[in-house]
Image 1 (cartoon, rainbow, N blue to C red):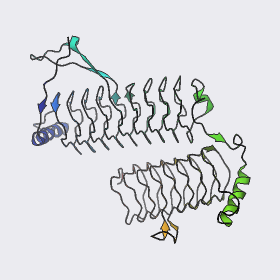
Image 2 (cartoon, rainbow, N blue to C red):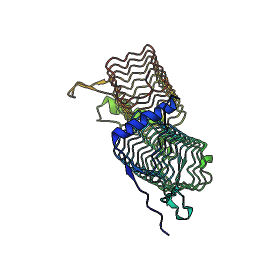
Image 3 (cartoon, rainbow, N blue to C red):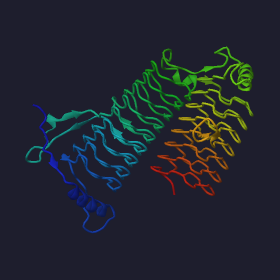
Image 4 (spheres, rainbow, N blue to C red):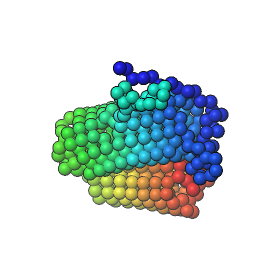
Length: 442
């Protein structure tokens, strides 16, 4: 017997607003409150943005393109709901039930999905008398293809096996998440934190894992064909039970037959001769963990997707250097000259950037006469930026959780869509800063 088709009642925005007010009254323990329960309703394109909807019920409802931006949805029930292309940006979905939900093309950027359940489920539709027929239960697979979870918190979340194909998971926090058997193939996991996550038999084929933290993850029979692990944080022991022969792994200078001293000398000649002699330093995808090179001059060099974890680069010169995608977690860049550099998608968690210069580089050949520094989509969790010169720097979509920005000059900076949760901005200069879409700012 085929599953019984539910009857969907359409809800108008005015009626929804009235019902939400009653729900908020209930949560505030005020007289006349009533829980929001809307199973199998049509709520497409309706606005829930910024509302407090904890423990609301939306089982099986059609909610395509609905706007939940910034809404409080702790323990809300979206079992089997259709949330295709819905806006859930910055929504709080802690412990929400999203089993069997369709999130295809949805925007969950910076959403809090801690302990959320996004596995497959079964929809059981009541008959005309309100009785449930378990024999006609319909299996609902969670659909999450092409969704954006960039900067979302999925700590301890439970996810479906089909979770994440062609999905943007950049800078996601997925500590202790259960991803066993999930298909994450062809997804962007740049900078994702997977410490303690269960990746048993997970398909990571052709994934971008640059700068990802895989140390301490359970990688048993994990499929890694074509996975880009350059600048990722892991040890050989982490991959003892997985085949990495077809993965793209970082290589050391020794494995490449290169010597840093010779590269630096050739680069100096290249700089002095305006390219007529020597050779530009190109250190892409090379593992230089713990490099001790204070005062290193690689201005206008190329160090993309490299691993420089805990490197000592104090007072280094990196003007106009392309460092995009490089892992500089815990690195010492105090008083470094980074004017005009590109650090897009860099991992700078715990890095020391105190008194560093990230202002624009004078460049008379450009229309504005200067070349701004870019640090877009980077991680600066607990980074030390005390006294740093950051004027005009573009930090769009970067994470500054618990970063120390005391006394930093942020004049005319772009902090669009940044996460500033717990950041210390005491005595910082914030004149002209673009804070559009930023969260966590006091």
